[in-house]
Image (tube, rainbow, N blue to C red):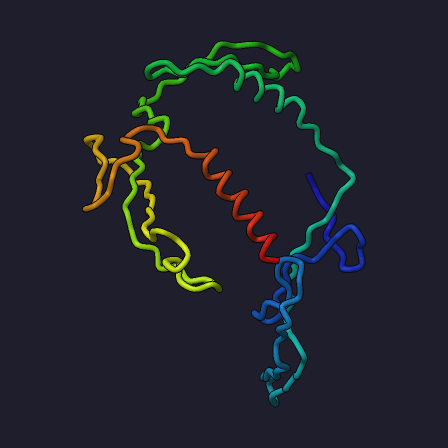
Length: 205
């Protein structure tokens, strides 16, 4: 397929990159603000040396142009959908139904298979545990230290720790296991905490 050479005045063409005397003056459709310095060159002749000076010597441009031609991907998408919907992997074999167009223009359905080396099945989630550790609160507000208005200042820090290869929860000194190694889903708790923080932020504002 032959395309016409781009023209700077063609509204269908947009300059993407321009290099002037090895200086990038246009990049990703945007001017870089750089430009080469004017320079002079000497050209020897049989009788003398001729000097020529110009603002620039060589420009290289890359254009993106839109054409009148349109592309139809419906056939390729139909083939992709057929393969995707019928693909099944068992052991080291992948079987699928291919729906392709022959050189004569006819559509045919073929059963195909591929061999591959099966890998280990990934776990559904990372095994983790939830622990807590007591600590003394040192928070201070406008009314003073928490100890001045609360009967006790002890609180807890909560931790989520990935379990080791043996399925054990790697606790530290003073930690209490609340949930042992399992697929933990704390989405509801996390969403509730975020909602409370959002309301508290509004109150502060």
